[in-house]
Length: 352
Image 1 (cartoon, one colour):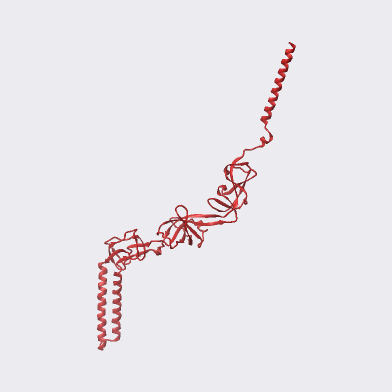
Image 2 (spheres, helix red, strand yellow; image 1 turned 45 degrees about the vertical axis):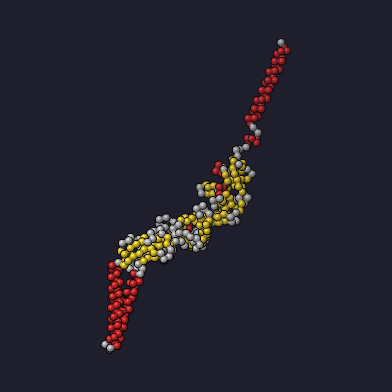
């Protein structure tokens, strides 16, 4: 019995010792190593390196081809007349010399012409009579001169009315498009009243709207690029003028640019323009996605040895893809381009 108790006591002691060992190991495992205790979670980010590269700030502008109001031509008879027919309706493209409208003299205008011709004939007869009387010594030189002046005046009036009646067929003075018809057949048209308006078939300049604040950054003589619907440059033209006056309807200022002669653009055709207002060539540039904002203050995160540090930025020219940095970073710095919104200053990071 004594031997059995001794063996049993030894087994119990060994079991107790094993339990103490496992308990110690469990305790060590729960406390962890010093390195594990000090480690913090690392944010997953993408980075890019700042490099010196040219950056341009460009404005997208919208406008239209403009023949200029001085280039438009109002077609009107010079004598009161009756509109007979419109040969070219609104929207018709016409060549130079094409008939736009046909008119005939009004009754009052016809009477004026007849009276003028009669007066001229009477004045001519009176001049001839005074010349005969002068040869017979029955009239003075002053009488002859007075009759000559009356004839000249009557003849000038008749010639003027004849010329005015010659304008009763209205033709196109240049190749263009009929933009307005102001009368209908049968209407009596006063002398000088517009019957039709012709605009040039090809515009000579372009007008673009621009925010008044941004207009201050644009200078005459600069370059404006005209784009197609896909945003590709069709051609570049010099800026003719910048009008800071604000249109009461659009609330925009205006930029004018001359169109090249070889380009056929109809007056009123919609145009897309682009103008550079700021550029930088010798500054470090970073992807625009790396720029964040805190109440209007631009900043970014610079990664050094796996730690993200927040730095405030002073920006220069910016584009859709890049931003030139005046101060805050230098060329070669690694900046966070993706994942920056979840970072805090001093946070550890790892790359995606």
